[in-house]
Length: 426
Image (cartoon, rainbow, N blue to C red):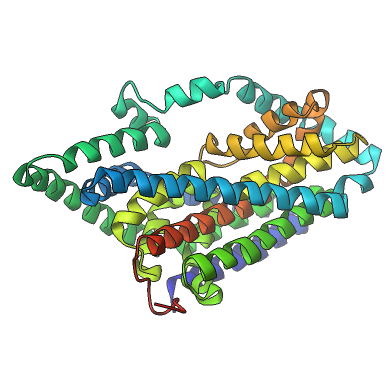
């Protein structure tokens, strides 16, 4: 039985067991199932601990191996343009389907007030985090690390990526013997990292079961029923983005069969669904792109770490739906200008969103404030917090799918021949 099948079985089993525990009303059973959470958390830490050595080693080797610094700039430019374009498309999809379905128009005021009263404390915490978010200028300056070691220690990937690209470009200019000495060392680090990943992935089906069952047993379906329309609109938008945007990109930009492509990469989105973290899933994402799609290490080691940091299509789409949902609850019309602001702000905010669980809530607050919904922020965030965890898992899966699609597109644009199993043309 393949690993993706085992992971899927663990996911389904976790959902069933979690629902049984939640619906049973037996507090001891809920506590028992909820007690599985530490095992899942330990697994996330195991796979997260290998992110820094893997990113540094693979990105440095990939950058240095490109040789020509103009090639580094070319690939980087194409990657950035692709990511920003797909993110803007995702936001637009979210806005359009929200206007058609109007998820916020059917919320009962009593339900709105009850949910907001229950969750306002959490919303205030998210608002405080958003208030601490640096300005655009500060974000750009923070991309240049004062101390790369500190950036690595804090899992601050974007400045670490900037440093590694610069250092890798410098290594590319060294004399051949010295360059090879550096590359041999980091190739060894990269190979060892992949061995650790293979060890950790053996535990993946059990960790997925523990994570999902604990979440469902604790979370339940009460709030989901109250916000089912909103949740379904987000899910529909995410599905459309994958089925249309990514399928077209895979077929016409990467020369791949969309169905075969999605089937071959299924392992990575399943892991992303369980961890709710693009960063934690990054080792699996890179392994999948290289082994299943045939993307070269040079491209995957450059495009995918960057994607885990700045490519947040699913998060940006969710933010668009959430903004429209909150505006509709309070019958506040958002005209074309306001919606254009949402597209621009959500696209740019996604670049600064960390690849960690629930980072989208923080950037959502920025988007809400940008269109004049500042007075509704606290209650609006409180309303959607109830279903955010499940939606966070889904949008992270979309983010990771987008990362692998981007790596295939960039690899094809560089003349690479991708895996025959998913290719439709050569």
